[in-house]
Length: 363
Image 1 (cartoon, rainbow, N blue to C red):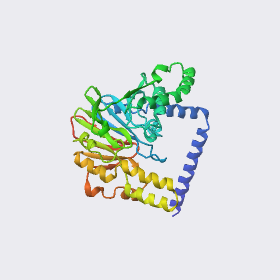
Image 2: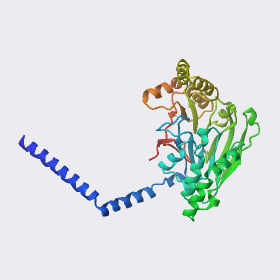
Image 3: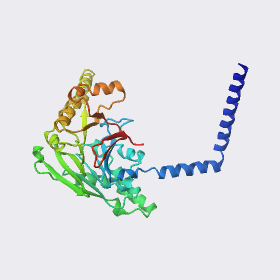
Image 4: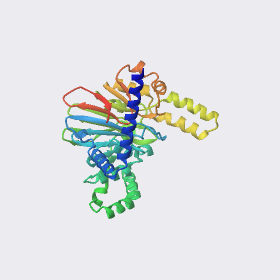
């Protein structure tokens, strides 16, 4: 017994001594400077350039939330890496912050693709342009989207022009030419009937196609499909159940589909009405017309014979297991396997010359 007490006392004294040494060392300037240099090297070397590996197509979810601010989820944003390129599909509020936190290779950002112009899909366009420029992007940033993209790009450029001037004045190596954004309007024949599709880009085995979806009264609204060396990724954008999306997503490896739990929204709508919040009641009733439920997204995935469905742009966002169970109510009866709830930082890798799908968290 005495031996055990002595051992415990010795361990405690040793721990206190070590803590004292660490505390003392931590207040030595030389030690602090060494730690700062170490942290700087770690940070500067942390960029995930491996995502540009041409041997696979990789998707990183940068924003899986809805327009309501959420500490765990940015608004809509999906990163796609293929053929050495890096694309962002939508750049909702807080997505630029996530792109930095996830250490995405922003200096290599190839282009931004906008599905439509609701604020929760475009809010960080100015930030992502600025952050990728400061990171070392050496070319004007192409921004693709439906007709009207010119107005969106010009608006953000106007708002950020003074900021760019200040930065160039203090860091002359930054170029006003590479700060620019270049809008590219995608015109799809048949978009008024929500039946159209067109090729946006082809390069080094990568083909990106845009297709119309049903987000009325927003029109046109687009989704995008990426095909690269036998692997395929489809991003739905915001849409009610869309048969043009089903056609466009045919036999895809991965479908990133928006999901609104309408059964939950309906309950909140009823509560809002009883509480006299007529604006919220009307808003919650309106949004259900032009979004898809998790069950409808599962139906789309089944009808398109998609291998993996990942639900994103979640409304309302899910904060715990019970909320997730409620959100996914009815999905397993439609699609028992091949469904994942997306989260910020989720990474899906599709190696070429393979049917493998690897799902994990970006570290």
